Amino acid sequence: MLTEVGGPLEVVELELDPPGPGELLVRVHATGLCHSDLSVIDGSRLRPLPMVLGHEAAGEVVETGPGSGFAPGNHVVLSFVPACGACRPCASGRQALCEPGAAANREGTLLGGHRRWTLPDGTRPNHHLGVSGFAEYTVVSGRSATLVPPDLPLDVAALFGCAVLTGAGAAFYSARVEPGDRVAVFGLGGVGLAAVLAALTAGATQVVAVDVVEHKRKLALTLGATHETAGGPDVVTAVRDLTGGGADKVIDTTGVAAVLEQAYAATAVGGTTVTVGLPHPDRTITLPALNLVAEERTLKGSYLGSCVPRRDVPRFVDLYRAGRLPVDGLLSGRLALEDVNEGFAKLASGEAVRQVVVPG
Image: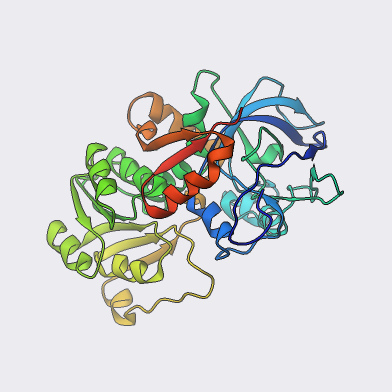
């Protein structure tokens, strides 16, 4: 649990209410460490504290509340936007933008407005994005859960809750990578590498992997990227040279405003730049206004990869099982719950790509 900005996370014993209507009690088997968690720890993304972190998880349903639609024993992936299914974005198929889900996430509650944790002094800690996966057990809204096959390894399944939905979705849906496209991906964490894999699956003939960390670039090559280049002041020239004038589709996963400007500059005439990283709320970007029109350029944001979890988790799992989306290659290691701070230090330094906490 995080009690103050800057951390560290503390392993504490909490009481957990049983699931209410539409909710699930889940035994957590694996939770990924993501930069979105780091942004809460370091204060660049303000959330109400204390909070049980972890938003990319998978586990087994233990108990269900009325009307949840699940049964004990089900294996589920938990994703970080609980989609109500009834608001205007949900009704238009844009469940990543669910309005009640976003409000609950800001407030640190489940979709129904409740907090299910209790400290010995009666304090009700907050939920992180409706998941709170850094725990042995958690209560979630059924709207945060997607059923997955029982033979899917749950440490791999956890990656589908954020890294795969966000990265692969950005390539498939937001950028709409097509056969023959030249693609560049800036930032090679779990999300960026998932975008690399999806771009290849979609038929890109060139995928340029960009990062300041060399071993991440080398990993991207082993996963199928055709080229790699270091991030930095010369990256725009490098990408444009490698792609013969710029990439048709560029995906920025870094959450760094200056890198987004570089990603836009590395995009070809008529191309699309997609950003999925979450910058600090105070950051702004400056782009040349003329070429947005004269070169028919597109700049667009992508949240949760523009995915619908209950549609896309099964699709992406099928691609994984067919060998076409080998996301198990993103796993850097497995950690015990008490080693979570060490894991975040490795994530922050660039040493690790995607680690998972395996409680118990």
